[in-house]
Image: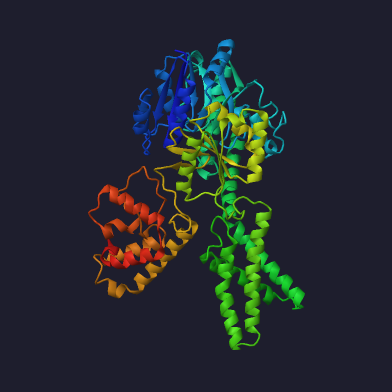
Length: 636
């Protein structure tokens, strides 16, 4: 047997299914087998593999044993000449396995091999080729020289940036996302070190392969897509600690005492600096707009006073700051901090205080007070508008103003497959903007490809959907690379179009994608639901002397009021008995739910329908009516 493909899976069912489709296409003409080792997924991955890919050699663990141990389970069972460790969130071209096997057969000194990886938007992933993280390499990365000089032979060695992306080269470290190795090499140098639960095991094994007298190579003729980070959020503080702890294990294992001491200091510094950076970055990301709002309002007010000839005073400055600080929570009630950012929410927030100020002014109740109030409202609103326009002009991520048109989608495939894919997107997006289709044969020439690039840019298309039933996986990968500069995002519609996969989204007939205006998972819906929860809690607390005679458990009522105010629960939530194939939006646990109130004896199908209806058609008054209709249960 020539090749064993080993995939370790944990709760990425849709990506795993797509990966297996591509793997079996690439295995045609190759003598080999495919292993899937599941680390106790709860999303139906095991059932999917058994049903759709019965030829897979499935190892279903009863606990999450980690990446290294799971891979070793399959490696020990394999009898193939070569093995490849493959992440489930990858797409493999049809020619990848044949090209790699031919290269390995022609170069017997090669013990490990990595391929060219691109992300879901066609961009090259630099971790396709890496250098050994020695103390100096780690130091350059920590202080930022690697980012400043990515192609430097000295400073850019972490990702070997001086080596061309499209030329084969001898490298030091392979990526665990796609790692080809000779079985004979593994028998000599050992398997993955199981002291690495996650991260670092690929660096350790790559280094041991070179210590064993073999070579590691980067082979860009074989290309794959890697939807990087779908199962791990690499900006999280937890990731920082797990990753750098893996680096510490590696350093302690392989470096001399002196070198280890140096690297240990760097690693510890990296842990705390990166963790602090992640916390600060997350804080700034969440507070950037409010901070800019305060600055904009204070500056605009100061400029107005200067233009009006009003003498500067500390009191007026503090008043301006107070106006700004009052404008923020008031505006938040009207959604000025919802994502995506909308200017209309600022206008909605300005309207009530402006109307009140004008009414007071018209009645003549005050002398100059209303004029100042009107000016303050206008200045506060103007500051809020200016801050959003400035961040939009600077293209700050997450603060670009929402395009009011619906998504424009270009489908690449036959008319039948394209129509089916667009119909699925229309359902999951609840409507699309411009919809167009390109036949695959139109892209067969260089001129056709250039014409498509112009079409995407001029038409302002947001998404390009490739129909895998009409295109080879290798051609999809090639098209993503060539179209990466168009600004569009890419998705792949599976054969039969049961679902459509992108870098950060999965559209499926079983998934719940809901209209933003009314959905419980929209920014406005979440805000309104929280306001209702707090308002109901305060109302129930005020009425407690009466309610204690109505609820089944007075003590439970006070406990639930505390849980809701603390954000640990909501007065109304989903019924817990629901089918896991429906990806309902995340909600706090409910004290009550629509099913229990309306139909306590409902079967599972009814539960699913009621949960979905509640999510799609959420309205604050609905929560209030359900709570008042089931007062005795609120203490449960």
